[in-house]
Length: 534
Image 1: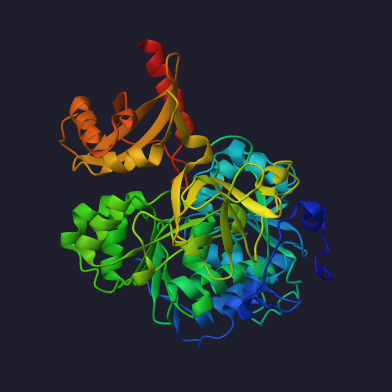
Image 2: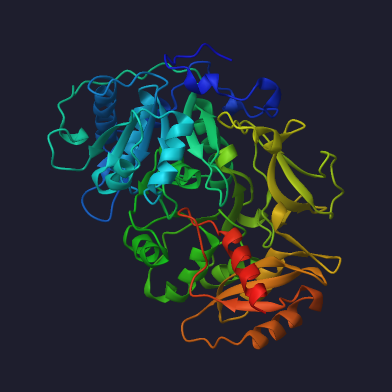
């Protein structure tokens, strides 16, 4: 490892032992980074001062010149007034705004470690993450400070921004001079991203300065192929690495701009895309499906790139979006552990129903529990490696994620004979009923082909006779009749009868995390409870 610029060595001291790291590869010329690298300085360098960078629904856009000046001012405050030293962890919390992005850039430029969390996370969650990462400083939007204050985190110094008080970060006096970026090592920790897992203690994923650029120089450069005149937008918050890449790292690396939305559900996305001529959109499969019904009222002619990740993209959703818009959704699988997307495809290379092929700079294969490669056409665990690897912060689960030099994502995949990777299920979502292996997503895809089904999730419920039975949860279009027998008959017309749900439960909405991930464990509990009542 290179000589660290961190005075506070906590992050480096708590990296997993080198023998627990996956193998890394830097086989693209653009991945040959210098030993000294500050990713914030790199992202801010280049575009002319008057080019727009961050747009909002109200007010004029920020320019690159304004962003550079504001980041430098914040970095001066961090290392002056607030006493932050290189290597300190700084919590960032607030809605998706230009100021949150500027704070993130300033923390990194000052050589500190950014820990961006979600505005929706509760005091107990915040306390746990601050305890794991030993966070001493926080920059928090005044509107999101209450729960952080309620968390009563020992030793945490909270500085708010966006308020009226004299101590507000944006009202403090600071030099208006350029801030010289701390010359961090390429392998100094830049950020700690906490997994948005649905169960268990959160895991802190440590990523280096070079990792931040590597996601832009692999997926964004080779698959997205952004242009300087692109306007990026999307639903994932900046505390979610899908959003951090899509709304900050990728546009800045390309010299483009991003529309930052505090509210970015399907109802807000479409009008925003139309009004601000958004050309690159990041959101989840459910949002694309929900927007289909509203498309007629909006001009989305500027849109040229639609990216989907966070959960499996059903082929039915892909086809419906393509038929209505002519746009091919770029499907992808990423992970907080690997920062962003590593298997994907774009344009003519897309095969609906598959995730795609390894992104340039990455390798992928399908293996069994012992790390042996599975034959094409047979399911196994997805294993990937590339320029970024899983490095949990002092967590024994590192040995589960990294095996035989590969990152094991916890997804069951099939590699088809043409080299495309097809999602089967989360490894723990396979349902085994009467000796049959049933992939929940396959049943979900069949249900989604019914015109009345908006969203669905399928889980297994323990059953004395069969081991497990298939239980489906469904959200219907407004006004649709809740007829489970009709839906069961529909699925039987689409799939082998043994895959048909034994029970269908209708809900108004599926349970999701703050980042939009489906909480299957809650559905399993609900399915078990329903079974007990029978």
